[in-house]
Amino acid sequence: MPLKPTTGSEKSSDDTMLDQIQQESFPYFLEESNPENGLIRDKNKKDWPASITATGLALACYPIGVERNCLTRDDAIKRTLATLRFFSGSPQGTEADATGHRGFYYHFLDVETGRRAWKSELSTIDTAFLLAGALTAGTYFDRDTPDEREIRDLADTLYRRADWQWAQNEGLTISQGWKPETGFLKNRWQGYSEALLMYVLGLGSPTHALATESYPAWCSTYKWKKIYDIEFLYGGPLFIHQYSHLWLDLRGIQDDFMGEKGIDYFENSRRATLIQQRYAIRNPRRFVHYGEHCWGITASDGPGPRNARVDGINRKFFDYAARGVPFGPDDGTIAPWAVVASLPFAPEIVLPTIRHLNDLRLTEGNPYSFRATFNPTYPHKGAKPYGWVTPWHFALNQGPIVMMIENYRTDFLWRLMQRCSYIVSGLRRAGFSKGWLSHVEDLGTDEIAIR
Image 1 (cartoon, one colour):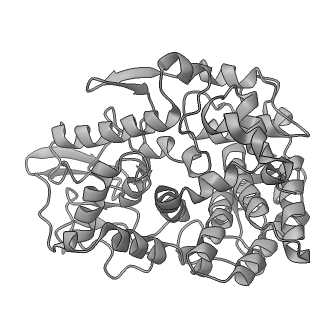
Image 2 (cartoon, one colour):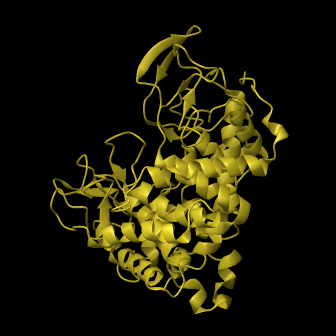
């Protein structure tokens, strides 16, 4: 049975609730940063490294912060310039402690030095999120001032530098990464995932573009499934159905794959969201809190690793895992941020779930609204009614909260990125058509370029 709410937050308007969540989540990108180089800490733990996805999300959130009066335009410009200048001038090469190579960057960087941390991989997907943030900045800061012109020039330079053809490692699909010690990673980006945005960026490059054959090669690895009488393009963790949509307005536009299925990727994400709720209502593994208004299972932090017998059932709890439904892994861990990030797709089920999570007082005493995860099933001494809660906030959670609330309310980022010529070109080379893409030509060159 789902936990009973402890307060009656339905009395307050949804707008007020969403405004509060967004306003409380945004400061992560101000406080967990190095203002000298613009790098953003991956999670709010002392001495934890920055991640390039966290930094890309910050670049995309600053314009929202300006529009929502969370920071001034001048402050956003200062932070954005610090970030873009750092990446523009950071060391590129095969050295083990460089920042990047061939226009790509290491997944984790030392917050102070900006050098590779933890012997992490040169990450193609995380670089894509960084570049998407840079293009957001280059599109938003469009005034004819020296600082804003420099933002546009730096964003353009960084995007053009990424060598997507090299990242294919002589194949059609994109490699997941590279290490100076061992070369390219074994795995490639295959199967439906958040890599949709990456392929669009790679196809849109004016300098080192992916071949058009790369996109159908990726789509050929998709898995179409029918779950709970709902047919959709499968991806287990909920974030898979969200991350590309942070930037891309995929409503009403179709590639060949979705054209054959008669839906678009936005509708696909809606179906994935509905399946999450139906799984929680069915609750096949008998977790004590799952239900109509308590779901949100995705790649996330968790209370394990630990095996424990709980109410007569042997349970296996994980730490970080790519949790997903209905095939798992699933240990009863819920990620509130993943619910919020589904808001544009299915507000009729998401808003009541957010209200329920709010009623559980999951934001109380936290510096940045919802913490990443909680798990009432996990045996935890001194637990509140909602059980174990991670002590951490993650940038990879805070960014989607801020961005998807804004997309739901105003379409802000979606409309902004429709003006970016590289995004438009990448979508078209991937075979997308119809919808808003049919009208881009009418906007004029100045409206879709970032320069």
